[in-house]
Length: 285
Image 1 (cartoon, rainbow, N blue to C red):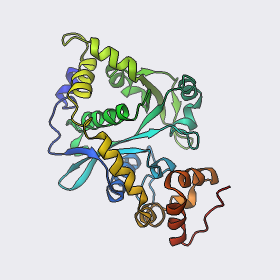
Image 2 (image 1 turned 90 degrees about the horizontal axis):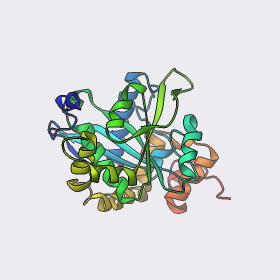
Image 3 (image 1 turned 180 degrees about the vertical axis):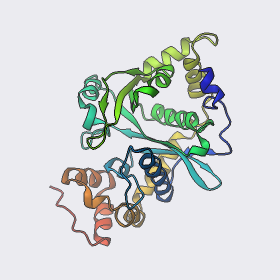
Image 4 (image 1 turned 60 degrees about the horizontal axis):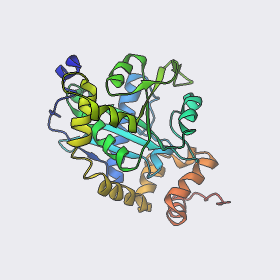
């Protein structure tokens, strides 16, 4: 923890970056460009001609994306995907058994995804401020179980924050060797641990208690941000620009995924997006 603090992660210096939720499709576009560039540069994702990391999850208004903005540019991203019967969660392809075990309890399972910070802002509080922002949203929507997939070398950081490893090491990708584990935290137990923590013993729990629960300015903004961000998904022209013209995502989704997008966008918006792109809409059977 002392080393992490020396690197700026648990401080307050974001090097001038402002942390908030992405509230427009233009901001989402820039966020997903940064995620694409960081992931492709590290070898964790393919370099796409679109320079956008887009999956069905990014097309759903239930997926919240938080950004760090400095000098008018997005320099950090943190997403939160919400479990659904239609598309489930991003890590189901590699860790379905472990995630299904959490689903059996009946609570809401969410997944932290799209974590990316520009190299110039990694030794700063940007990453942990994005985490605080995500945690505020998770509390607001009633998340019960929060999971994330990380390389085994990063597991200790999440353990400090109250997460536990619930999977063996597996390759996240079917194309390259990408050793990954699933970390999980039960929100209710995390809150109980934090509330019982004393300043001289549990540094991770103190961070959760002081910075995520009681002195978290993002909690007061989470509900209004959610309404504004969801409203952006009523803009058929904007959706067409991002998911058809720039990202060409809809052309690559399965029929089941397209039905999920239709469900979340609504028939009128979904049909307007596809019609303006010259694509025939699948029958909503």
